[in-house]
Length: 461
Image (cartoon, rainbow, N blue to C red; front, side, top):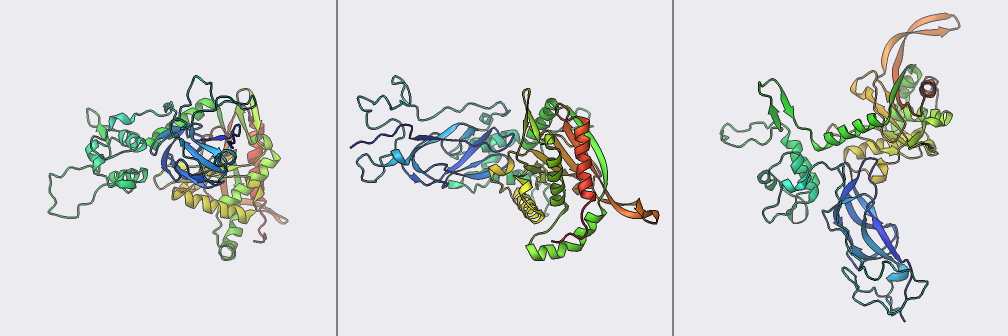
């Protein structure tokens, strides 16, 4: 007896990998057509310029079709595979064995008549197409066609894009050692090569031939008079530049500043940091303390936790704090602590340390770099006392924490005012003046400083 289930096909789409990511590369399919897939079982691996990730199946069933092969660059939101849910995945005879995989066209012609309740997947004259052609996304400014795999070696579109943008010739590309399947050059291989390529090479042998071609120098062009060096932006710097310009074009930026006396906070951390690490196995930095104060201030001023969509203001109920983290390459990435108001100080410390560590190792998951509602950047780690950060779209505000410095300050006591050595820091808030006025922005920033200044020096860990 044949069994048909209406709407049993599930379209697996390329997930959104971050606020500004528009496409991703399929690295490897872990399942093939005809394989059974369990709920949350990893089905493929994908990569972007920021993160590599395993994608789990959101449903249980049988993988019927793969619409894009490995190394294909696919726009976010595009269907990449079709999974038949369990209602359709069973054998038509009821013996429990899966049917043969359908790759191009159904091997069995459709039944001559269908029930009116059964909704057709497509109009009868048009056959169901198993693959969707790739439509280039406007963000991509370069074409991989300038680097061709003239020999038998295969290069993925992502690798060819990187090679083109970095000025790597075909001959140079052919010399890179590949660690992928069948010796293919992976994204990690070419990025590692570029990192070493940009570093000056140390001569280790006096007998080295002077005729050897030098490929380690960065791509630099000098002006006619030799007084200017023209250095082409690398791939990541082009993306960062585009995002910064877009943010400035989108949001009229205003920045407010306050100075906070954080002496009690500093002395408390110095006192408990060793015991804190022994008790919880985690280092406690100032970042989770800053985040704790930001969360409290957002509760007091929820209209800072918004974004703009057309003429509408979207008030975010979840407090998801992004924290800018520096990568070894010098670029920044913003992992997000989702529902930060649900963590205590120990939980925030653990989360901050984990995200920062995995960000530096390029092991963040896609969902860990998206859906932020407010961002913190600590410019004090670079020795800066203050900064005017650019808003991370589509958020409405970003806070910068400056370096903590010892300065003489006036302290009020029952016996009169005294001058003492105190720990001070500047906090700055850049906000979208379309929806955050100076009163709201300034009051919110002052409230963050108030929470830091009121830190309990006798707080238990």
